Image (cartoon, rainbow, N blue to C red; front, top):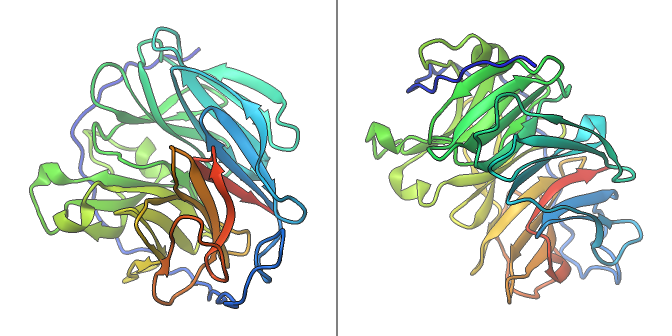
Length: 338
């Protein structure tokens, strides 16, 4: 196995103009009451895949009426991602004294396909986020070894470490687009600029691989003031066509078109944290979880709208705020499969 000694250095990036991508329009919800036993009319079919409390859950939107537990797993530290093009679920785990192991499951059967060891990872004690590139050739992870978390990217076939860095800066999950750009939310508080306390940035794989001296060139999609940053930005999710990015900020869901000059639009509001969202295959709807009672979450589907934020409250399920199921073990959505 290839082993590369890590050197984690301070970093910067040069901002460039984003490529212009066509942003799709989004149909509005019909506002009527949902039919019994299923989401409101117009909601795309498919299967939701979600994660929570050591289980992977699925929900068949065509015929299901509740979440089904499909796979259980346990480890002191673990993180998961869905590689939708390969129809695979990846779970990285470690006990803190053994190497990080990545297990790959078939999303159709949830049977184990294979597993492998993350290179040079025996000293890792904590795992935070995992992301697979569109072609599955590269994986990114944030982890730590009794120190600040850092980002690492490897080439799966060879086990080569492509990039290591961004110490204590990555505060979100990791998502890749079809052009091998890695989207992350970064805490920039160390710069001391209250007008730019954090940002969502896309880093091309080629730039990560070519990084020297801690400097990486990337594309800034959105920046946030110190007041806006609050507890940070998380829950990143890309639409299937790569034209929109969903994220969570200050307990609500926001969406932004990927293109120059785009401004984030707030999708939800309410008294509890709305989190862990994913786009439907067409991009017209969004499924997510929200904080419920007794540590259990409620799961919702809403249209991907451009109107006033939808108010989400416990047990509310009608029209544009459709309650999929109350009091679930779901922590966040991992994918919306066709």
